[in-house]
Length: 412
Ligand SMILES: *Cc1c(COP(=O)(O)O)cnc(C)c1O
Image 1 (tube, rainbow, N blue to C red):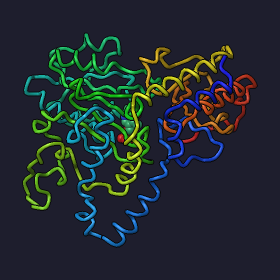
Image 2 (cartoon, rainbow, N blue to C red; image 1 turned 180 degrees about the horizontal axis):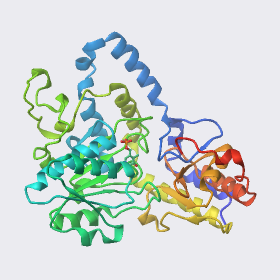
Image 3 (cartoon, rainbow, N blue to C red; image 1 turned 180 degrees about the vertical axis):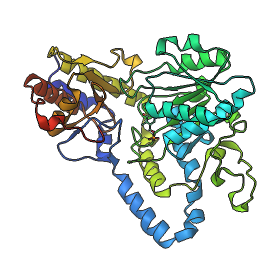
Image 4 (cartoon, rainbow, N blue to C red; image 1 turned 120 degrees about the vertical axis):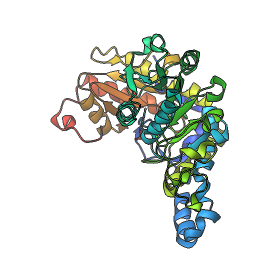
């Protein structure tokens, strides 16, 4: 069984250990929720302050040109591109993940309708907003597309000639189950289907090779492993050869070929910019931009290797105790997993609350999941070891079994 000394030895050999210094983390807290809201990079507050005081305060409206605010969606998109294996001009930062899903789904459906394809294929366990957006697109579009669900192991047999788009989340938000992005994309393409991947729980945690795989469309989240801050704007990816073929329904003036021509007729910009809608949210994009500077010298293969090792340590430290009431909810095979480890417990909510009271932040996902996100940029092996030890103590002593830990709050 692993000991604290072993964990300390792993930290001494960790090639990413120096990165923890780049974050502002509360003293003594073990943070296992970077998959919901990433920690604060040290570079962010100063950068925001500078933009607010100088670019906004002094530059005022001139900063749209002089501080190049107008290009922020493209510039910051280009910084995300290498993390997902895309070219700089295939990624743009804008809106929320939900809104981007709607735009890309509707655009893909319109394109595929010409081939008589009108089905959106997904799985019922997908992140709810992804399903709501698909349902919204279905109800809204005049072509009345159809929404079809299949379980993960029956997706391929459901890729029939009516299917227009396959939309899935790469890493499942609840269990951490990871789809095989490459083989599902290839199967979709063999059947004439476009793919729309939600990379919210996989960007910045494992290498993704959209170009090599030939993936069509993708969206992802700025505030999880990219550490862009609460409500950070999301990103979207469109493969270059598809960009000028797609028309999205939320065609605002920022996606126009010449916004300041104030032309009453819409004419889409060439390239990825046509996916924009309204004015860039400068302050939020700037926070994400500063957070992304961290990635300049980071090798995602090393991030992935540490993520797998942290998860292995966490699982074995907990399972070594042989507690009957918890069961691993995440796939045991790291190849089938993202960077979160989840356990089921009948009173998962109360256990998570007791753990937070003991200085370890994880979260709860209905109905019975305790979810722990492992962010390798700022977590140490000793943190994960200590978190496992505290969880085991809470379970063994039933310290979660108190009214105060059962009280539900709005955000779980
Ligand atoms: C976090 C997350 C989102 C978030 O969507 P927002 O519109 O940015 O709130 C969407 N999809 C998945 C799979 C997520 O994990």
